[in-house]
Length: 415
Length: 79
Image (cartoon, rainbow over all chains, first blue to last red):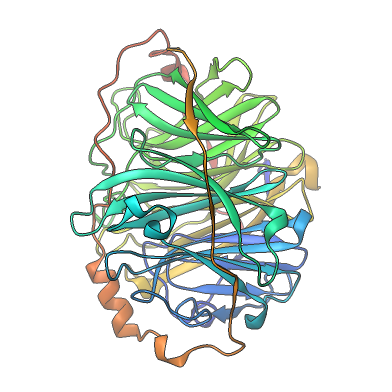
């Protein structure tokens, strides 16, 4: 029977497309705007003007002028079709007791170098009390009128976590030459805040309180404050993750339980993250999923993604224009090398529908993998999604990483 | 649910003026394959994390996710 998940595009990026600057900690991200695709990894970027038929390498080390100790990593891109914007986040190496989170924007097609404008955020410039601190692990999302950027802040030297922060920027403010106004809130109670995809007039932001409770922050576009409420969920386990593949490589050595996928759609808030094994019910690491009623904060259900023979990890999810939820994740372990998977939540059957985009041929030689994947709504085909993934092909070194662009949809919507 | 809404203050800020990228890349900052190999080598097998999460408390919901059947996954497909 044909898979309910249809690939409209499922293509690899080659060595020249990435400048050979791949890492097994791949961290791919992407945005689409008509025929244009912007795709980033941990240390490379690439653009396509023809729907991923051909790519042109974009060097994140040198396209924008370096700051601090130079470009580091952790790139994120997101498209804002309503504003004709592509947003690019870049993190720079800590130097002189601080680092920079750069927010670059390009309006319109082409993504020519000179079309990028950018603003730099440094902890100490935001709040003098944040001296000797640095940003790490950033992500982005949007609502009707704002761009949201979340980050974790660590102390220089000890690298101890200090606070989590979410900024929001009015989308109307991205003008050439202008300053950007922003609002932000911070907490030292919750690590790694995660913003929802699919938000309209209220952004929801989620983090763990304990191994059986999440905190849901709500930030209406018109509100002067953020409020939060705690929601009990079923217990889960974190700890050291292990799911060695046939070559013995533990691709989950860096994995943890931070929330990586949040969406809001049809009055429901969805949350997902990588959970550790919990035998006998969950014999391998898996994707913990919780769905919450947006109005009442009652848990609707907890439809985990799991298997008795293969581990799942590093999920991201996003609603399409019809409110259907797409997902991207990895699977691997046992007889399987790490492979890339996409799919969607089949509301009519209350089940996830998944399909492998590419099986890997190896695990990472040094057991390093992650740290995130990306799923976005396609623009302009709003009933479909795009995902950025990667696998190893022909070896276990960083040079064997094969990034992957996948445009996919539900069979009932696209055929 | 445990539940009273907490309120968090929102603060405001402003960046410096926008800067424009140069039309040509800076050659000085380009990385060599050897530099990238070294970065891969230096990368830690454990990520920077927050504090360890407090242990779970058993709740009325604890058993419900266990009833979810394993997820099926269709195998590799072409373009």
